[in-house]
Image 1 (spheres, helix red, strand yellow):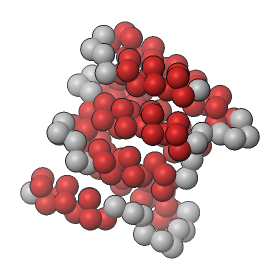
Image 2 (cartoon, one colour):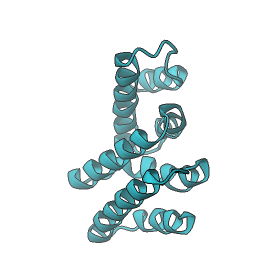
Image 3 (cartoon, one colour):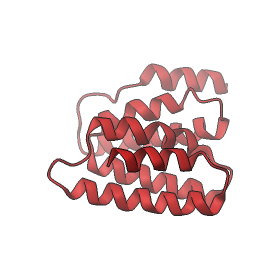
Image 4 (cartoon, helix red, strand yellow):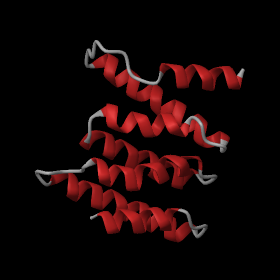
Length: 137
């Protein structure tokens, strides 16, 4: 599985739109199938795939951004939010402005979901979000 995630990460960095679309579809199918197994996704799988997915969230085409969003939501459904949140918070430090905005939206959505289910612990990364907001002002 880790070889597939490495390959997917490499292909997401290419500029060919058709390849990126197909690779994102493959990544979603792979996450879905690996998540259905008892062992599920592990931290090593995350460390291979999530940094690239988060960094490429700010793609200039809407369809590709939407597929990134869907893949990230799928990963969030298979894993605890705290594991995914660290990678999303790293996206707030990206050089790409659109990536930072998309990651801020993701943090807001995850915080709303945590609040809706009654999680009493505040979501991590408050300092990163404040730094992002101060930078935007």
